[in-house]
Image (cartoon, rainbow, N blue to C red; front, side):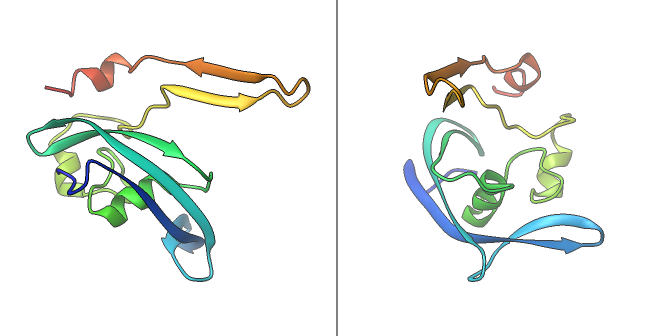
Length: 126
């Protein structure tokens, strides 16, 4: 879908729980704080391509935040919309880390790695 705001920050407390032998994450006052920044890169009919920046790094953070926003990740079988997912022939989530920046654990030097969007995801964009 289309987002009301073209950029923003999503924040909540996320907590891990097990349901039917599957680990899920839910918003909970008892959970750990997490924060995600987003920016709309491009809109396509009823889909939106986002750039996401993780301020914190919690399990399933992007997926849960986008679900809470009302715009789940395409291909996400755990938090996504099954009816929407049926429209796409995708055997994975439409998530891709195009840039990762971290400090080397020994030297402390900043490391930056970039990766282009895979063809299997590119072909889904109109």
